[in-house]
Image (cartoon, rainbow, N blue to C red; front, side, top):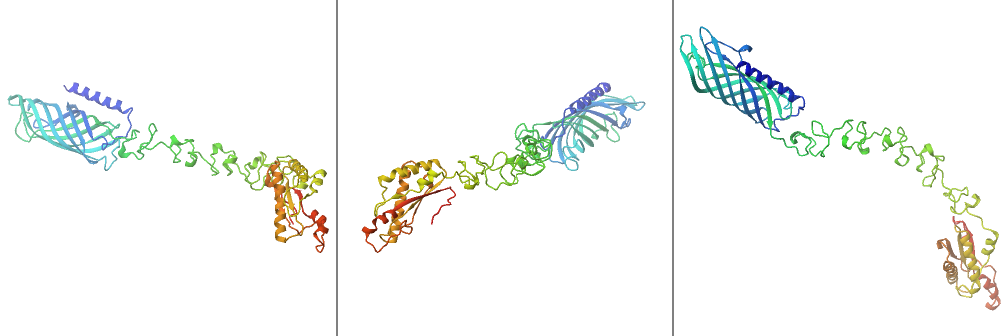
Length: 488
């Protein structure tokens, strides 16, 4: 029997080692509170015939089953069932061969969970239990008295120490030794003297039953999961938090540069110059720049990096080309920001606007005459105004000043208003004839203050009619859009 049981214990130990090959060390008794243990159990007799304690050659093997329940970090409650055999042959004192089973309730005082961590690989503990024992013995005393198939039930108690070896969330191994006392002295055939005592050695496997709550299903129980809302499928560490390989505070599953420490606002990518452009996208990673220039400096803020800017001192707000220089839409050599006529070529001397030709100047010298106390454009002057429309289309960027005048008859206030109405009447006609961008038509009224002909006010109206007719007029002045016009 001894040989057979020894082989069984060896197989159980080998099985334990195989289970550890793929296990992790993450178990928590507080998460999986029920545990069942299966083990080999060996007895060493101490009685009237002999003392077998600590003699490995005198082990008699059996087996056992324990059901344990986690109470708190220090205590477990257990139900322990064992069955085994024991024997002694000590001539001339006698011999016996017995089988014995025990059923006990006990407490386990754990060193892991208070002194050591609950998930420690090695976990020492103390145990105490009490209950009953059943035995059947065949004994022969020195005087030849035989005790055959003697069966009895008695009280039993034990206390001891052991070590638990934690291999996984659900599997552990243990070894323990207990000092077992029973309430009878009949195992060895002698019922006198002290009760029979035994050393009980147990070695086996423990299995945690059930499943710990794990809301985010990351393999780390909720009770010690520091990141309980980890997205499904994300790899986590022992605390249940997403892995952060480079330790930059950005989890690998959100980190676009998981092997380089970076910053959160760049999705975990590094930014050596701190300009807000990740190094991998930064054409100047050691010089602070702007996102618009791919991380390179732009001294004048025109959107062209200094390294590509041929005009690095362009004033703020000026539109520039790819080379960083101010644009020149009409190609006249005057930059748009200084060109009063950016869409029409002209010399720099005229602020980039074309100079008026002689024919245009001659047309602008003409005047539109008005009837006395009237602001209606007469039919005979419409041809002149049509020519003005053509001039405006020839010089689309120029501004036309329309200047209205009156003669001296009437009050100054009345003549001022009359001159303004005459200028507006001319503008209305030009707009009616299709002048583009009417905003460049500027009207001014000068009343009677700028006569072309001096009039002797002491003479009668009839005698001054001709001179006064010349003063009732609208004249023109055309200049560049910078409004450098004579508004006096």
